[in-house]
Image 1 (cartoon, rainbow, N blue to C red):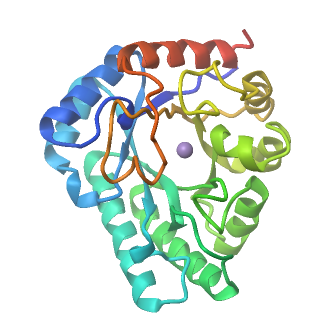
Image 2: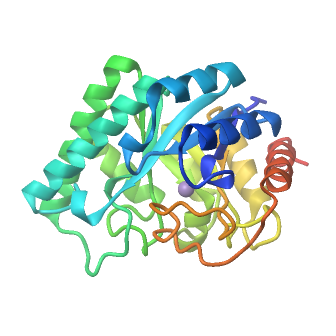
Length: 286
Ligand code: MN
């Protein structure tokens, strides 16, 4: 059995990325026993590269970078100016990722992370695929993996399921692009937690675990035993990153998009240590 690196999303700790916030998030992540911190980069310019890299090295953590695009910079669009702005945002995020020493850039990077008012179009999808292909080719220079996080219907009209993501990967045709599966979204869109993971197989490259209400693991309706056993069935050895959101910690760029309206916890360290133990035990079959 492989021991997966365990990660945690920075929004468990902080809502911004000042030097003080970065130190709080990074030191707390290390203290809670995690190997990886996922840093949101919806605005890549918000991340100071030199100080972030220094803090990561000091505390011995691996970073990953995630973001979702906005409607103003949506590559899943037929508006070429809009697609160009999205491309620029992704290239800036890749620069930040490289700068802080990350080799993983993922999230809702194939389009806007938002509720669309209609279905996507063939032209919009083709624009998205072309930009992701270009991003993947650029990412190769720094051995960076690009992850496509399929999300629920209220946060994308393009990739809502594992199978849609696999079909999209075939169109991109670059082997450094992987599926990023999030059990919270799977709970809404998939029929079960095992079939999609087996369909991904070795093309699964990153995992988010979160409860059905985004609070404490094990207190909602997600069938974690089925999900963890599916990951073991495909010998998944990649990162497993815990995502949880509460109105107790607010990121002005992210919290409203994710509809974080309720207070599901207020003690970040208690939440983080419980999740770490829950994931380790779940992957060990306990
Ligand atoms: Mn997620």
